Image (cartoon, rainbow, N blue to C red; front, side, top):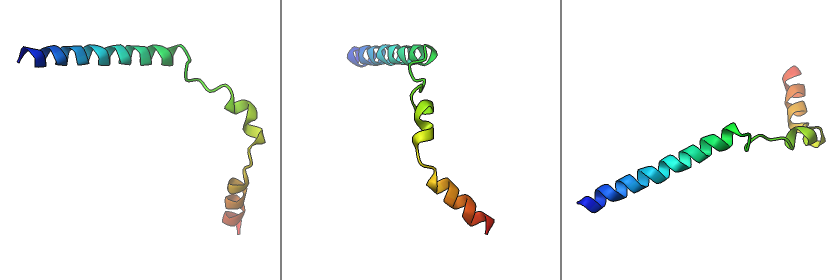
Length: 57
């Protein structure tokens, strides 16, 4: 029975460590996308223009 409590404690500790690392990485800007805005104008917007012309008719 004591092994179950020890495993629960270890798993909660590991989960809290991963949560802390995730929060730290989000706050430090690890997931900021700085590449996509610079190449967004190279992507085709055909689906958007086709939908807007169909709605006008």
